[in-house]
Image (cartoon, helix red, strand yellow):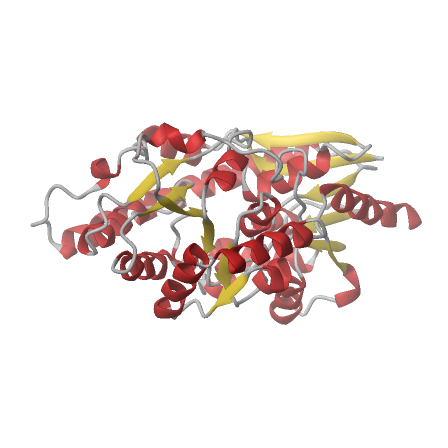
Length: 390
């Protein structure tokens, strides 16, 4: 089969959506006409966003600056971002129009590019819609997201990554259920397993005998990091030798600054370590080196970090909302994502109760084996084959 693979901006960082597509593509026997572009906005963000390795560099060194000035600055920056997004969208629209092949299956690999279906005729099309976070959770009613929602309605088939996201698509789009296929993400068992230990934690040059809590993800509001930090501050009152490691870019303008101010207010400056973006080859080593993964997300289309953590034999504490119960089932501890007292208590229990920890490790490894990229590729191929039937 020949696929016009409409994959949006080029990226060298592998996580989330890019990981989903990469892992499936490695296992598909199809011919891809890859249609990607260099994003002006993303290139400028890379150029002007400071390194996340030093948390102190993100602290506001001018505490007398008024809130009014900050709001004006944020407004100007957001206007600039929206302008660049519009330029990128128009550039990509022209590229896609000139690059697609008449008889190929058209696979739009993210809901963020569904707007293309409003202006380009694409017969035999499928859209991967991971979630509707901007529309359903963030209440984004911008022209872009109105265009994306209209474009999704024109999709001939939709692939999504959880039963939760499927229900959201039906709810907000009134889209026919029989044209939605749930294809869960998987875990690469060659990389993510618990069969060997790692010394990567020694890179941090910290004293022996510490306990480590890990969070992997962005710093956007839905990730609920204030709850994580408040629960961590409460835990620190009972346990002194604990550090919180944070992997991942902020992925939101101003997000890192807000987070660091909260860390400062809670007196956690010496206890929270930002590791920045971690490569796919190194990420499993960090999962294996820590004592718990915490994923307090308010709304998730799926949640790869809990799955990967379980595969590596590391206990998981996550939220009891959205798709996360589908990921962890009874193999992890689920808490109310608004209750930092409960999160702090569960952290303490896992860190101090070896029998509970061992039970979570065993259940987590078993649960993670239910999700494979091989199965995801097989199910994706079946969706493509639907187009050969008409």
